[in-house]
Amino acid sequence: MPEVLVDHPLLKELLQFGEEAAERFSGEHDAGLLRLNLQLEHRLRHDSWTPMNTLTFARSLGSFSFIVVDGVVTEESPIFYSNQDGAFLSHVVARDLRSFLRTGLQNGFMHHRENWGYRLYGNDPFDTLQLTPRSAEVRDFLAKRFELTPYRYSPEELQALGEQYDSLLIFPPANA
Amino acid sequence: MPTINVDHPLLNELRAFDLEAAGRFSANFDPGLGQMGLLLQSRLEDGGYDCTPLNSLSFGGTGCDGVHFSFLIEENAVTEDSPVIVTAPADGYCSNVVAENLRDFLRTSLIGGFLVHESLSTYLGTGKNPSVSWKIPDQAVPIRDFLMERFNLTPLTYSLDELKAMDDRYQPKILYPPCD
Image (cartoon, rainbow over all chains, first blue to last red; front, top):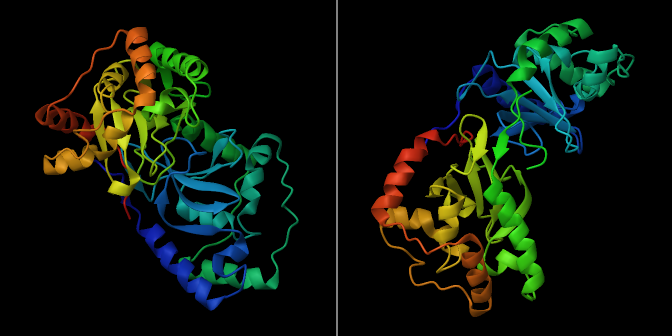
């Protein structure tokens, strides 16, 4: 009974951090990382609207997932975003989890749902969005804990990542 | 981007048969093969449970306790040679191979219907088959006979040893999501 092997210390730390942040920055609807529009899953799971070889670790309307290659997930696993609209539109958004966290420091993680358009056309409707003070305090806590600096992939970098990783995704048949 | 290649004429024929049977034989609920305990899906898709193997595509279920039947994907393909897996979420984090292929899966369901497969893990684990005496309900007999005639099927019963050997052979190929 092979089970996907998950060797990802940073993910474990992030899950612990998520619980800590939720307690420290409480709120009825926006505790902890939710203030950055990131809802962590307590464990990796497969979402039916994501490619077959991915495991979701967080959501922000859609799903953020690791790709499973040769039955393993590691700190080198790239991050994909999948829309939850049944269209099986999935694309790479970060080279690894650490890079992914850096992409949320400017204005949260919701901008990834527009990532495809950004990658193709360079349009970023979230570019001018500013975090509220309530969200910024969680952002600062996150940045400090993991020693992160903000980072935003350019469309060209995302295109290059896509060429490197998107072909690894395996999709279920559309009409079978 | 790779997509799973599906080449399974028998599955397509079975779906057509299901619709035909639903029109031919009246039923108050679960028409067609549903009367025998198989609710066919119109397309192959993820089984939808945390315990569903990643490398599988579901084609139907019993409609009871989330039990679903899937093809094991090998080399990015589903064919008429693909083994059939039963996943019973209520039984824990486990799936078992129930038949070598769809044709044999149909054959193993001719006597007791498709619900007998729900207890496969119990049978494999204890050696006692809770559904050994099950018979399909009377109202499903005409559909069963129609199925046998259409696909030229005869009943098949795997022995416990055969089931264990089959499960041993395929279990290493089944990729489960992480349990925790």
